[in-house]
Amino acid sequence: MKRSLQGKYEVISTTGEKVRAFVPAPLPPSPPIDWTTGLRASFDRALLALGRLDSVTTLLPDVSLFLYTYVRKEAVLSSMIEGTESSLSDLLLFELEEEPGVPLRNPARKAGKQAGTALDDVQEVSNYVSAMDYGLKRIRGGFPMSLRLLRDIHKRLFAHGRGSGKTPGEFRRSQNWIGGTRPGNAVFVPPPPDRVMECMGALELFLHDEPEPTPPLLKAALAHVQFETIHPFLDGNGRVGRLMVTLLLCERGVLREPMLYLSLFFKTHRSTYYNLLNRVRSDGDWEAWLEFFAEAVTTTAGQAVDTVQRLEAMAKRDRDQIQSLGRAAGSALRVHHELLRRPLTTSRAIEVQTGLSHVTVNKTLDRLCEMGLTREITGRKRDRVFSYVDYIAILNEGTELPETGS
Image 1 (cartoon, rainbow, N blue to C red):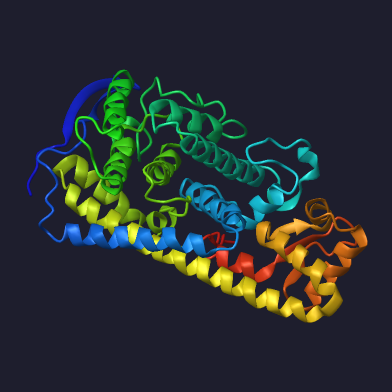
Image 2 (cartoon, one colour; image 1 turned 60 degrees about the horizontal axis):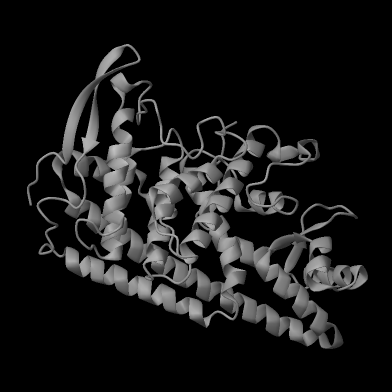
């Protein structure tokens, strides 16, 4: 289906030059989406994959154990797209002493990889966890997806560390751009600041099913493009825009748990992702974007189901092995349960969570190391840190940091 430009260009003066800023037309698209090109089948497959993902969570003995680390994997991936270099292990180590989104109480105690820029990176990822947790709590408390919620999420995303000076929680009052060194040579220039509130207001109406109801998955796909096109914040638009997809699906009851995160798929197919966003704006090719989005959902949901099943099989295997310890099995199973919740932790943290004695916890951890289930990663006699090796290896898939040159 041929459409015209999905909005209009406005000539503005910024940084001493005249540029064309794009102001998108309100959603939904006009003319309506063409569902006769096989797109309906693609969305049906995506919805089926979401149904499988939602149902697999009901099979987990304790879904909260899995979600704790899975949500943090998404935080690492989503932040990695924006240029941070913090691994899942970095974040888990950081949170041994810090609550998500809370600045370091004593930065001098952090050394090595988490010093300087790397410390900024892990703080940024921790902020993302805090923002995600906040958004989910509000949604589950009945608060609707709205401009207020998006601003509050953004505020937490930049509450501490790098970016805290970029007006957290406020829509931008200056011109931004995507690609290039200035608006004049940018790949894309979003709406001028005096049009941001108007554009976001129209997006909020669409989220609230005005002027017409829109199925949740389609709504998430369309709203994501519109949000990225408006680019309402000075920084963090990509992270908020990706998070909005999951929140919308949870709000509308498509998912009971926040299990779908598209960051890895978008990271893997980054050039296609940006190309399709531009094709929507310039040619109105919503159908090509929706095919890509449906594939992203189908693939990502399938990967999540596979991850859940592998982790649960691994946990069962290890529980069965621990049962062979005889009288020591009881305390070892309690330690193992805590490792499922936090697969990178200290003996002291396990003591606090399980109520077991210092001696029992340390003897148990040493036994689990001998069995090959865990590994002590500091080499110290005191303040030891233990890694649940296989669990972290599965979750680390896709989050590997790029190798740096010499």
